[in-house]
Amino acid sequence: DTGVSQDPRHKITKRGQNVTFRCDPISEHNRLYWYRQTLGQGPEFLTYFQNEAQLEKSRLLSDRFSAERPKGSFSTLEIQRTEQGDSAMYLCASSSVQGLSDTQYFGPGTRLTVL
Amino acid sequence: GDSVTQMEGPVTLSEEAFLTINCTYTATGYPSLFWYVQYPGEGLQLLLKATKADDKGSNKGFEATYRKETTSFHLEKGSVQVSDSAVYFCALSVIGGATNKLIFGTGTLLAVQP
Image (spheres, helix red, strand yellow):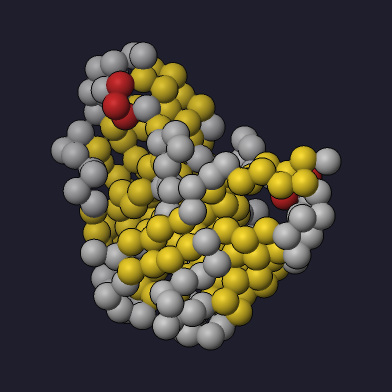
């Protein structure tokens, strides 16, 4: 079990550019979540996949954001036409439901800075 | 809607002091409750959890008891160490809905001085 990995760890981009982040979940986990964390705040839910199906999207996820999980394994989060307000830490988590327990394990995050 | 409220930080303690970080929640269903810890420069790590009322989660000397009557899940440790300095997040998820997304509090920064 190598844990959840995310790539890149840091991304600096100019306003208006597109960026894409990748998340590799724990291999046997069928659930995958994206969260966004701004400075001094707790993470906020963005979107959720069960296998390859995207089952929920937060209102925080504007039309400029898109996420995929094409084969039910890794996931990508793309932000088009980035804005300075998109600067944040983007966290990925994965889980596998066991009974009534669904414990999410987080990756190290991708820190995005939009100049 | 569902929410989590944590005591504001920073909390500054001397080594070996007793720690309490308060957490209360509002939930429409039957939530599971979690404490996550974020050390400087690192991602979120699960510290402990409880899935039903009166359950006690424990790990690394930290404890928290799921109190349904007071809708609370306070984090405690009898003797903190400098290495416990981190940001602590209380969170809930409601099992049985469309997702089990986590709802987090704003976090409490703990600074332990030698």
